[in-house]
Image (cartoon, rainbow, N blue to C red; front, side, top):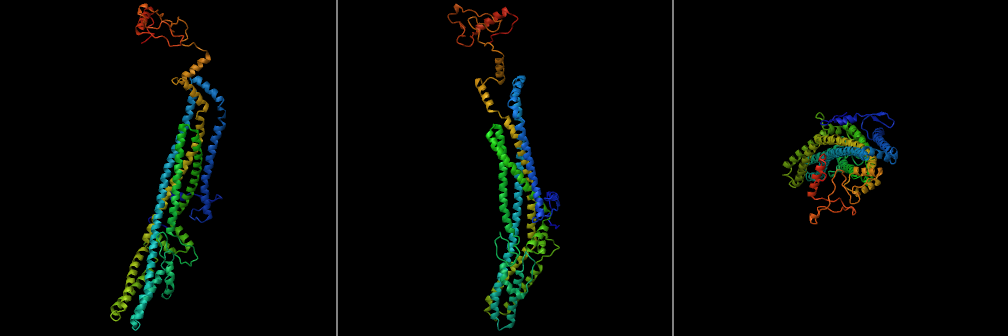
Length: 587
């Protein structure tokens, strides 16, 4: 297990990595991350199938509740009505309402609990989706930064090679021709040309993807043309070529291509989860609305969407479980997988990869010898050019232009060489590697775990919702009950339900005489202790204080009396019956 300074697997990575792995034959397998192996893929399929088993169990639970409500309550329509009437008679007309209220309350509380659980799951899902997106953003940013570093190395090498090749083919060749009669100057010019060709050969073998190969000076000319094809300028989104075009091996790993691919896939993943979360939220809220409004059509539509959300929740849980397990296997030992896979696919030097992945102080750079030889060659070229500038220019003034061009190219080459030495240091690429691991194995792993929890809780919530919806259907009033209630309420909206039932019960026992059904002029109040009504007085000036004849024939209300007459009646009544202190005709 290769250790990476600055990175250690998190607790969740170690826990998920320690889970047992079973293949299709239910045999235990190792937990080494080998995605190309069929045995490892079988373990992921077995883990994903657990969500399918949970989906089957959920369907069985919902089916059992449907059978219970459809079969066990089928005869409630006939015998249930008689029992409800007997309960109503015994409880004073509140049996049906109490039973109905208990049913609605039970269904309401179950639905509210399920919707609350669904809302909690949705909140966890939004947080997990955001964490996973942050981790992938950090991973892609680190990959793009590493790709920019590799591209900068490629551009520096290509610029240096192009400048040295230009100096070899142009000014240095001209100097040899100008110094043709002076052998010491010709030897100095040829030495500069051969040293430049040596540097070109050394830099052409400088690749991050394979071990360095020092080219002899005699073959530098033949390799100068192939080096330009190996190191070509590339935009930051494309990694430099690490192998020659004639290599039969497949192309190497490209950080820029990987970053662009991950960004596109992450955008689709993030959007898919947002749509799934919004679907769950809409279904939960409209189910509550349908229960509150008792809208059957809305519940039918939300039931169909709840079934869809249930299948999507269990399906996403299977994918997330497999992804979490695979990611934990990778994050437990990422360097070993990178070394083995890259060496197997492209034949990349393990020494170079290990140098950049670990960046240990005890390890020297694999490019140290190459850079040292190149630096010495450039220093020798600079020494010979300084000697020619002091000694040859006074004798050959025409050689000044070619000599200045060679010195300018040499200065540019030395500047590029110093930048190249800094970029080839392991600190920059190792920091990008650690940042990418932290984004993927810390934030990405945490986000996937929260998304798995969301999928599990939402699946449980929708299972409970689908089990409680049949009870909601039974608690809704039927159409005939709604019509009966509307008819009874249209007769007298101010009459209570209990009074209407008492009136109906009285009509069944026998019709009682109406309160105003006393016939003739001999009408008396319903109280036996009331005094007889006085006859009209002639001295009342034709304006008696009461009606001379009752309005019974016109079915009018009982006659009214003036306050003075009611006072007189009360006094006379108290004199006749002192044991009756109540005033029968209050003001």
